[in-house]
Image (cartoon, rainbow over all chains, first blue to last red; front, side, top):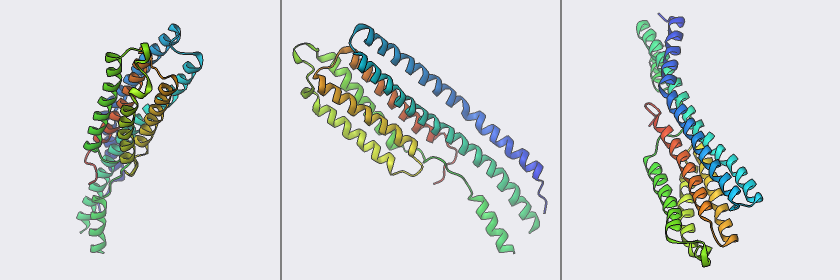
Length: 108
Length: 146
């Protein structure tokens, strides 16, 4: 039975690298957009406080809301990360599966 | 021995991991429709009313608040019943929490300033964007399990 673990490991690593590299820009651009959105909200919030449209208590309450919005954004980024991890893991498993199948076929 | 090997090959071929649910076009569509309804709600208040003389009294908008909350609750339930979907579920819960909070503020103050309308609209627009990113993330998965 011919099964070279070094060759298979190297193939799996390349598959993981390829999958992550392909999807990573999606995470980066989304994180940048979240930051831009946060900046725009904070500018609006500061303007409302300065103009007196928001009391100090409501201003502080809105700042607490920012924590919840950040949590929502981190949950969205978590899904992107999980999608990348899923693609990478399955790409690696596919390489391993093919190598094992080839070795089994040779043995049969 | 041969049967065991053949069984092993078959098992390996079907071995895939899954961390997130598959993309659901219907949920993505409902997120888009609800996001537009919220945007229309706030832009409508801004364009057609003023805070003078009780023009933005809560009662005038109570029904629209309920209609949108119903859509948000529906989205939450659809997200909740899907396995591996805790991230999207949490985004929905946060959106509903803030929707109810800002609705209560409007009810307590019985008015809404232009600035708060813009801030509330921006907040929900950004939360719907997070929901859309989450759904789009599920579409990134190559060859999702059926």
